[in-house]
Image (cartoon, rainbow, N blue to C red; front, side):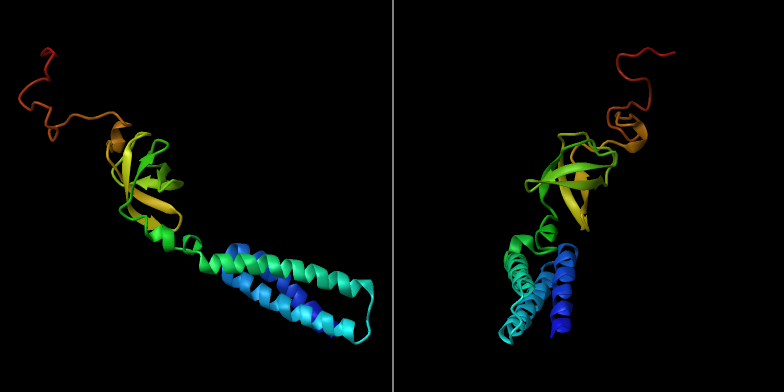
Length: 176
C-alpha cells in the first residue's frame, strides 16, 4: 500500500507543477490523485500503522489537493481564464501603443499590456492601434499613425505623397 500511496503522491506533485504550464486539466488530475492518495493513507492508518509520518503525509496531501483543486475549479469554470477565450476576442479591438512600435513594441488593449508587431510601419507611442491578428501571446496591429519604416519614423515625401509637387520644389524652398 505504501508504494501505491507514494506513486499517487508523486503524481500529485508532478501534476501540480506541470499544471502551471499545461493548464487547469493537470491540476484536476493532481486533485484526483490526491484524493486517491488520501484514501490509501487513511487505509494505512486504519490498518494499524499510526506513525506520525502517515498523518503528516495525509495532512500535506489534503492541503495540496484542496489548493490545486481550487486552482483547477477556478481555471475550468472562469471564462476569463480559459486559454484562447479572451485572446481571440481581441481581434478588431482598439488600443493604444505604450511604446514605439518599430515594428515591435508594447500595446495596451482591453486594459492589458501585450507584445505587438505593427503591420504598417513605425507607430509612435500614444497612437491608437487596432488588433488585426493574435498569434500566441503576440498581437499583429495596425497603427493609426503608421509611418514608413525606411524613413526612421520621419514622413517621407515622394511622388505618391499628395503634398509633394512633382513639377517643382516644395513650397518655401528655392530652386537650385
